[in-house]
Image 1 (cartoon, one colour):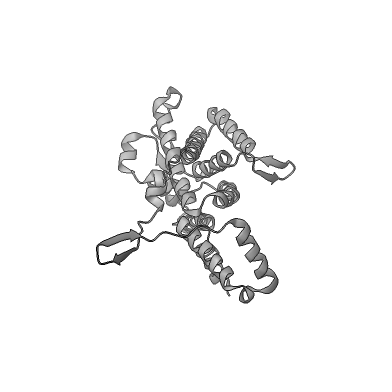
Image 2 (tube, rainbow, N blue to C red):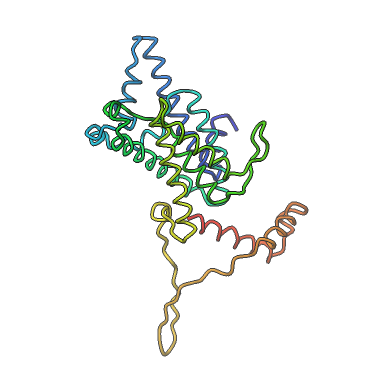
Length: 294
């Protein structure tokens, strides 16, 4: 397998959407970066950067936003520099994998996009409501996946607050403390030069928290966007007296202990040595897992 095939496998066939989101961000960064370098070498101009700021970054000036209505979506895939994208993609990788371990990849994409939109809305609303930003409201614009990443981070911390990750020089720290420190730093940094960026982080954080709380209460906001309509098969039973339609029901989900025991058998003696019952149980578990993902 060559490098291109390996990249395709990791991005499209790895079973995770984290790699796909990272690939999109990196590809956009490289394309515009290379165009910028080429333009500089030939013309010593920076029209590429001006194009990004004018047509792809999300502005706070409402009349301009009305004619750039797509920018609350495009801004979350753009970055202002190498370290900007580096740290965002590192956090996206770490938090995205945790998110998918407990939920699924389709909800991850939903939280990334919806969290980015929430961050844009909070940023725009703040700049138009608070007098502190009156002087820069007409010219301010933002790029970056930070709001989306913050939404995923806070969603993870809300879902599994006591889950620990190891940080360099700090050791094991629970997600709830990481998220809390992250949000507090953003809040205190609003008075700095990148107020818009920190405000968008807070918008993403609010969405991540509220999304998980709604999910825990039985309200899945991602369902209309992530669930495909499925056609339920029906069996038609014909008798002398009547015709009855009924839906075919799934059998009971095999418990995790049974599945683990079967997997142990595979690791020691191979799949071919499983009994017919074991193979049927494993098939049912995999089928129901795929249905749950849909």
